[in-house]
Amino acid sequence: MKLFAWLLVVLSAGAAEVTPPPSTNVTGKTVYVLPIRADIMPPLTYVVRRGVKEAIAAKADLLVLDMKTDGGRLDTTEDIIAILGEFKGDTVCYVNDRAFSAGAFIAVATRKIYMSSGSVIGAATPIMMSPEGGVQAMPAGAEAKMTSAVRALVRRVAQKNGHNPEVVEAMIDRNKELKIGDQIVNPKGEVLTLTDTEASKEYGMPPKPLLSSGTVASLDKLLAQLGYANARRVDIKPTGAERLGTWINAITPLLLTIGLICMYIEFKTPGFGAPGIISICAFALYFAGGYIAGFSGLEWMLVFFVGVALFALEFFVFPGTMALGIAGAVLMVLGIIMALIDLYPGVPTTPGFPTLPRLAGPSGDSIENAMRVLLIAAGGSIFAGWLVSKWLPKTSVYSALVSQSASGSATTAALERQESRLVGLTGVAISSLRPGGKAQFGDDILDVRSEGDLLVKGTRVRILSVDGGTAVVEKI
Image 1: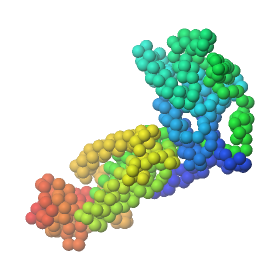
Image 2 (image 1 turned 90 degrees about the vertical axis):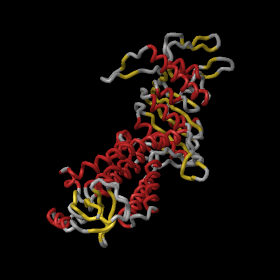
Image 3 (image 1 turned 30 degrees about the vertical axis):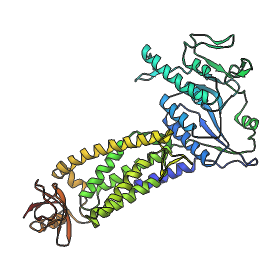
């Protein structure tokens, strides 16, 4: 529990650093500035997602990408482009020094591109990294296939935002000749890279800038030029939690599996012990990963643990009622899925289900991912649960995992004496034993299992022994 509390403190501290105090708003306009100042890697996706959602919620008028990057991963680039597409206001990219490779792709995902003096953009040919680090040669067939796919992706984004797709294609494919009218801008066999002067040069009739809308000395001067000099400005700042979130989300199926298995062990053993603590920590990390990634708030963790509480009431207090168990299971599954759903402010919802997004855009992709994580964890948990129920009670590990009593204060000897008094008691099965289940002995309801036979509900049984906290019974 201390670990759980510490984790919440860390997350709260990280969230507190997200948004600095905004500047004085004289014009009534709002500008959000997103930093693209590192390699295009998963932690940057979390920063962009957080910033876009804040901008949408604040109804910002302008979203500016402050870019200085050497490029990065294509899958992360696609995620960022999709996230930027959720913002419906004006978007601008300010190339503050350089926008190579994936940075050029993200730049054309905005409606206007401006560049600082001496900055460059381009050199976007796909490359393959070697396992030892560095760049390795890509097979000709694979290179052609990759180049074609990237060209199609960027061409669609460029056309959507009013940029010349042939310019961006020439940055990707060295076999692409860029010719505007009678003038060859980039000959075949070279990868296009543009300086700020070259990018803003006008071609064609009527004259139109090649890619950049102009060269501006600084971001402040750009905002003034666009009419946002006195607007409310919010700069999104990266936190240390983003990189932690990358590692957590990489192992979400494992965390979910561990949480479910340990929860099962905790329900099947007396008292509250190590399995319960491990389960709580695993689920806390799972929900923390979704929170750091910007998918959802911590409210879905609360929904999940309410479901756990209802399920526990069904299991321990009101066995056989079914309603509490079903409601708890539904809330648990809903919390697990919604923790990984990429919801945006104002996103259209499914009719009749106000919390569920339509299967489109980042929301649709995240629903597919959440379902995949859930299915992997469910399959792993079922298999592991079968192994645990069959083998764990017979091992020395079991006694180390289980607390000595419900209060944790009784000695091992006292617990053994208590269990020995159960031997010989007779009662009735209040659930079918397959072979595990529950039986009532006087006023006490115990976890029991038969010696292997299937015993139907209502069968009278006798306790033969107690094995690892579970009474072994026979049919009378």
